Amino acid sequence: MGIHTFFTSLNDLERIIRAPGRFKFEEHNVAAHSWKVSQYAMFFATIEERAGKEVNWKSLYEKTINHDFAEVFIGDIKTPVKHSSPELKEMIAKVEEGMMEKFILREIPDDFQGVFFDRMKEGKDGTIEGNLLEMADKLDQFYESFAELKRGNADPEFAKMYRIALKKLLSMPLQASVAYFRDTMLEDVMAEETVIDIKDITRQVLQQ
Image 1 (cartoon, rainbow, N blue to C red):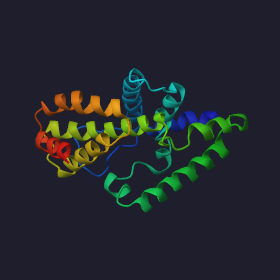
Image 2 (cartoon, one colour):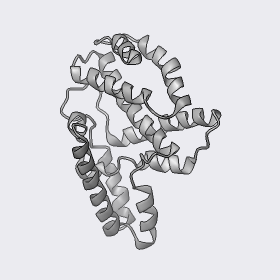
Image 3 (spheres, rainbow, N blue to C red):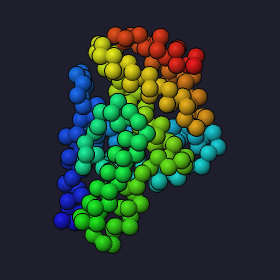
Image 4 (cartoon, rainbow, N blue to C red):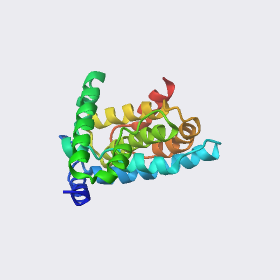
């Protein structure tokens, strides 16, 4: 019971594999994903600050580090299933929220519960920090699918994941970050050789 249970539950995030059910050359767990998302968000927050935006860094780090903790309870659901309909996505979010609430009430000491309720709530909330979280989260999907295509994985699901992630990244309401991603990072991405030609996919998405 207590904060000890919360700390020991963090180990479970290392055993939850992302994009389950597909052959992958590189397995990625939720704990590593959360760390990478924090790194991506930190970089793009720097871009936004340089463009004159004000960033609440404390809020940003809390959102990115904690955004997938609820997967301790339900695991990582396959992306095509999770995003197959807005209704299903909302239902899954409600299940996660309910289980997170019960966990906090059961395991977190009373004097820390308010802090945990604030830190563990949905982070993609329309604030600049929430948008940075969403962009960073999608960038990790982008890089995970890219890594499989680069390693020679011809499963069309990874090309689909790459395309979906790319579209989302280019549509984010973070003008400076999107411009840097589009004009600088994508040039380096397209210079790489992949089993399914991501140059063609990228150009198609950019022309849409």
